[in-house]
Image 1: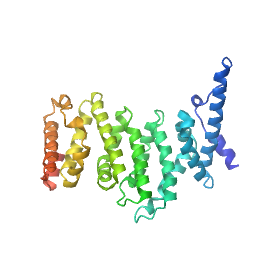
Image 2: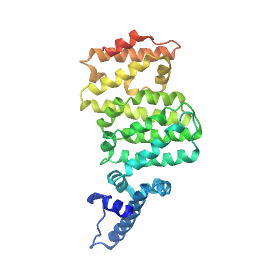
Image 3: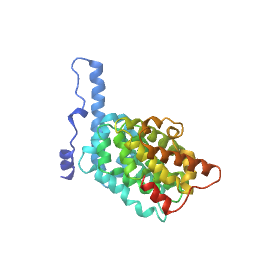
Image 4: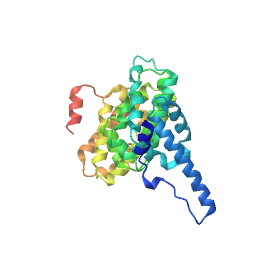
Length: 301
């Protein structure tokens, strides 16, 4: 009865399904193969809602997600109960983050969930739905763990993979979401506490993200760029954050390419100049101005 109800509720958008072609034999064979793949994907998605079958389904889908191609992300998103089941897997391991008691097996299982989230985050038809549901926020606890055990580092890398999939798209809505949900301090924490692989992944991702932010100001005049600069400016007031900014501050903020967007915004130009000064002084062994008064000055810009 449960399986039958799930099958009825598995609402696959018609555009996902392949229809056989009566005119081309070769194409019909390919579409028949695609149909079998989709049937397999549908059954595996159904299995995700069954706690007894979920682990195996996660493993198989995460390994075969390229085979299912563009059909998988909408299938995961629109099937009844699937996202809730995946989020349950994520939330269930929170207690094992601090103190760090997470096993490698549990970490791998959660990483398989994150692989499916990455698939959803990459798809143009599900990306904004994914963001509007605030699902990336559920991954932030994995990115701010203070211990570099192997299971936790795997989670950190998988979470960064999802964020990276989001910022690779030319969508200003993604940047707005990430800035609004404090991704910058989260990423800086990863830079300070993650191992070398995390830092490499993050450096590439952050540079891509803020190049996108700068590119998107043409749609949202200088508003978005102003927020990016103010966020970095605020971080540069902290000595530890300033040290990290010497590594990850995007080149587009250092080489003058954004100046054309700030011609009529004196306050933001000064903010950028102070940011670059703080980073330069920090790199020479100095320190940015500390204290609440400096932070209050930032907030009034």
